[in-house]
Image 1 (tube, one colour):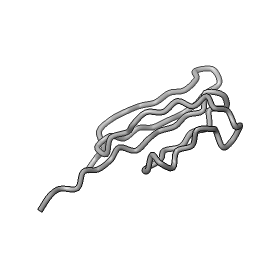
Image 2 (tube, one colour):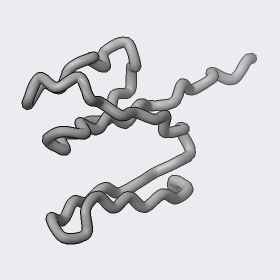
Image 3 (tube, one colour):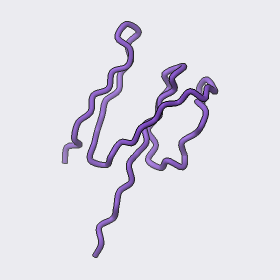
Image 4 (cartoon, helix red, strand yellow):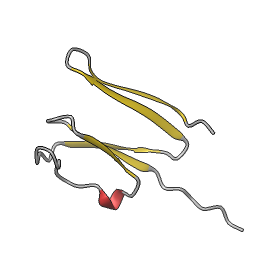
Length: 71
């Protein structure tokens, strides 16, 4: 029996308004921000064994913390 290959999720961040989302199916990711309609979106893959937290502060900016997913 073959193991199923898990595809990475995609984290998307609007560079204009800081809207963000994680998509489990990259075909659902949009090319414009649904909040402000900007096309200035940054994205990166999140592997199935990875986790992260995201926070935003006006003084410190965006902070992301990455680690391995706990089992």
